[in-house]
Length: 206
Image 1 (cartoon, one colour):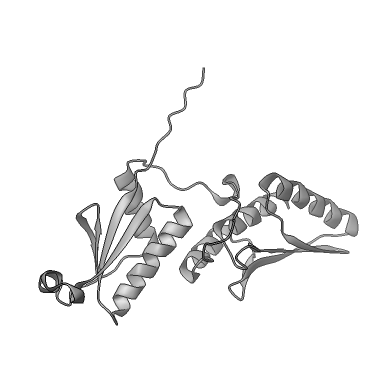
Image 2 (cartoon, helix red, strand yellow):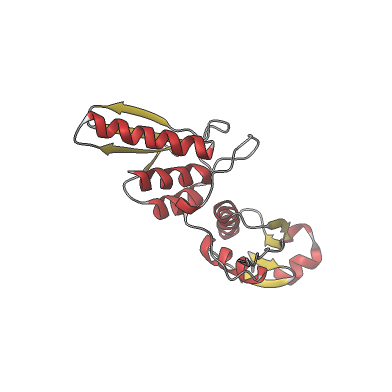
């Protein structure tokens, strides 16, 4: 009998102490949101403007942003998405990293969620690599060359099988000697993590 141990990551309560017109605060907030989107972190985020609370203003003055996780100060002034994700994972006690894109599964999007922000797109694109491009922040694209039509068609059919398995379907332009693939989430007219997952699976099938 094979025994599998399943690790559950607890939801982290994150409090971001900020001020208005604070570029460092905006950068920290974007990094946290990118990390949550990119790694699907179980996080509840609260933002507190210290200027609206005399006690907080006296406590922090201009020394923001400050980020607390579960009541403990975790970061001050600067944090990037990778640092934040690593901290949350360690707090959750999993000791595990996110699955590789090609090993993950596409999650159906029913709308109501925002497209990935630039920081999250850039991180996922760097992980995907292999000549894929993000076009106008809207969709992924890559053209695959082949020596003849038959091989381009066979590749297109492999993509079709993957798309049906994942419930996520790309646009494909099939021509003699090439197949151009475009991927985005139509429900939100933009990119989600599942688009990069599908691209990685297609890359492995090339």
